Image (cartoon, rainbow, N blue to C red; front, side):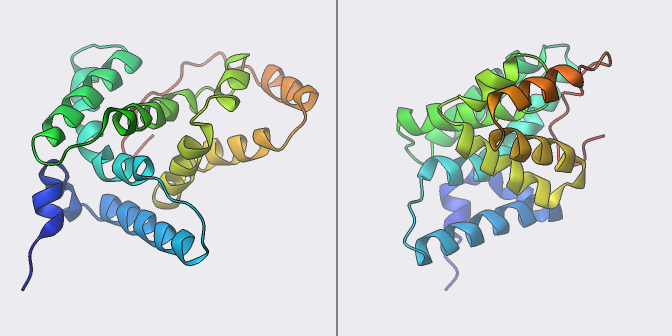
Length: 184
């Protein structure tokens, strides 16, 4: 029998499974997790929770952005609502909720690829999880390739090289804070 366990545990995310991009993102996340387990590597519920709940968070984020909220405020507010709704169905410890929020906020920080904020992002405690999530997102959204490539390159460079990279490419154009799969 089909117990629809996903529907029971994550009802706020179920409707998004019909979207091919989000379904693909989740399948990549589950596949990568399976591979890590097979290889004896650690896995964290923070990463999978962030992946599963990302689609409803983005829906709310876009709604709040359309209402005029600044990007970080919109994402904080959306994250809070999604996690609160999810708590009604599956208890998520606060430490996991905080990790999920940090991973999601890093997705905005990854958009800024110049200035001294790059160093702060590289040294963020959740950088690796957020970066892995960005890579996962870039597998289903080719618009994220430039960001993923930048952060892949930046984390493997000495500080002096990073300085020339980030200060040499300062942009005058505004940052596009759209986070949906179909970024522009």
